[in-house]
Length: 122
Image (cartoon, rainbow, N blue to C red; front, side):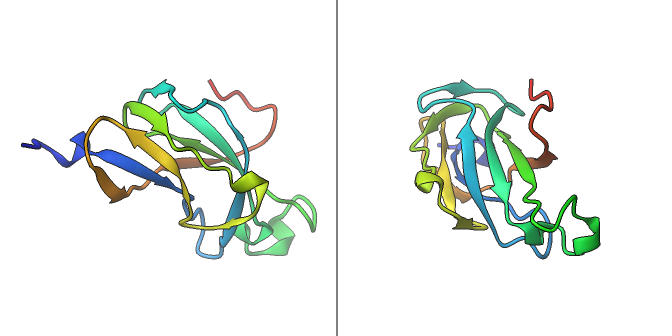
């Protein structure tokens, strides 16, 4: 018998960082499949579509594609990671699972931040 919803495995999907954000692609996974992760551990960097920043005047350049750092919110093992071969994917697309030995509890909200290469991710 499950005691809390937190005991369930979580499906990882691309989060929506703004109302205008439509897509992203995996730049790189920071942890390989089978890695045991802790809460708030960074595990993937995504390149976001430029529509993340709705006003072009707020972008660093007309073609700027901001990066997103995604952290786990649960402890478990990263499983079934899918980078779609670097192709662009819609917000909400499947990236993998944080598995804790129990059933998957649908999609989950993940902690995500804007990121620039060279930023400390530890």
